[in-house]
Image (cartoon, rainbow, N blue to C red; front, side, top):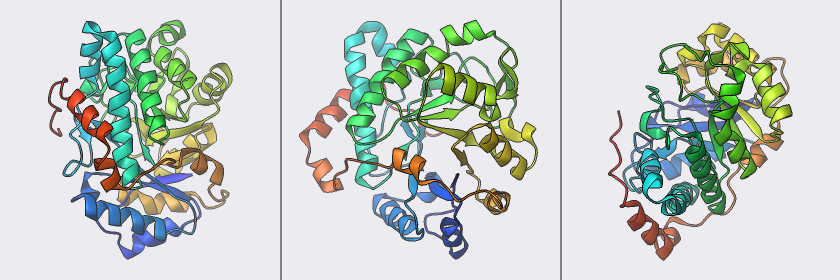
Length: 338
């Protein structure tokens, strides 16, 4: 039920205890956990050895401004470049979206990362947190490129995570630091922001990550802990049968639910399968909040576990990888970490 985070490039003794907790289903890795490829590969092996259950190892390896692992990995262009290419050559952009996805996912699978939280299918409409992480302002373009990205990830043996449902791109606020409210009516949301999610689900995406944004015309609660959004719309109306996860509950956008325990309860009770706890100092309170709840279920973990994988040396020897890297050079250089 919980996907937690750790503090550094090696596991501390208390973090091994966290990983053995029956409510912990996985770990999200960040730049603070990374020095180089050999170190992070060893860390991943240690994470797996520290739990009696199958664990998900996750990361945000989108490219551009959000790429946690850099040294020793391909510098991936931001997704916005694919939208710019689509305006000139849609066929080339769709092919390159699949190649970008395959390359990203193949490199992560080669070091035994199960899941990179991708693709971003928010609209590129000026949100301070999303920026160049999004493909394009136009819903139809985002839908087409997002579906292509899902196909590329799945070819590499990685499940796809559409984010941030039902759409974070049309508000300005960064929900890491601010609360955000999107006042548009349901029809506007359905025809615009939700179109890429519908197409991504049709393409086979296995997971959806919720937005910490409130849409009061639909429900006054933020989407991440809204049963209206998760159960009634995503599950029932959109027929999504995959895994639903929160965004990080340490973000300001989740603070309206109350304490750490209240945030966890709100998200799980609304229908989230996984709750992301990305700040190590909130993990102890999160584990305490799980008292009385059943142990983590194995089915959602199995649904997102990495499948096809190859050793790193074999991936480097694959001429397809070299060709895809060269093709991605057609896009602008990736932005540095903010």
